[in-house]
Image (tube, rainbow, N blue to C red; front, side):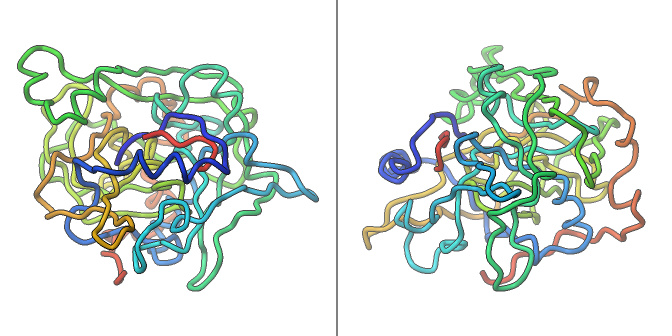
Length: 341
């Protein structure tokens, strides 16, 4: 997963993306591609996904006849994906992901919301998903599911982190006392979110190497995806941990959950290049072995949880609504105006 930052026009997005995505040096699919669409996920996972939000530039979200229309482009056409690439026929448009952690509080990555101006321009959209087999992505959403930024509650971003993680010298950096720092933002929305519940964050500090985890977000700005069958690789850095989650640019800001407790352990913030050129002249989503590669970096929830209210987040979402939460199932077979890599 490579992070997203640069503002692009919708029409120029594809032309700018292609050179950015060429020459991949890192990997984002570990083992099997475990990403599931909303309709493929278990009821418990869909309940969690209902509290996940997509972030859009304001010019891509327009009010028409009482509903908001989301301006998107085709994933496959925009990136010249090879035939058969997963989700090739779906639309992309969101530039980051986030999660509801308070009645009106969104948790995301610090590089997604960089300052007051970028926060004011962002639109926070719930329900961008595909809710039935063979169905279309929801690119028209009711007004109650679209929110704006009231203020940035707290934000932190260590620019050094990107260089250390993306050039593969996390260990060297740590030895030199230059360990990557946190990357997060908490945003207060213009009003309380209607019909969706804040999700619980872990306050126990007991995350261990090998713990099973999953992520819910919007890879490459696609409709929401659930990706499981992953684990914690390294918890030694102070501000983040490393995983083998299947994530992409656009997943930045996604909540990473403990598969046992279903509580949030952190925020997906960094990773490697997502696509590679093939001999056929098209691009493919790069895959490696489950235990290979440098891994995807997740800001630890311990860095920011003191700023997140406990009200409404003391229990896991599955427990609070009486849902039996099963392990995230494996996958079946099988910008946007603001893209940041």
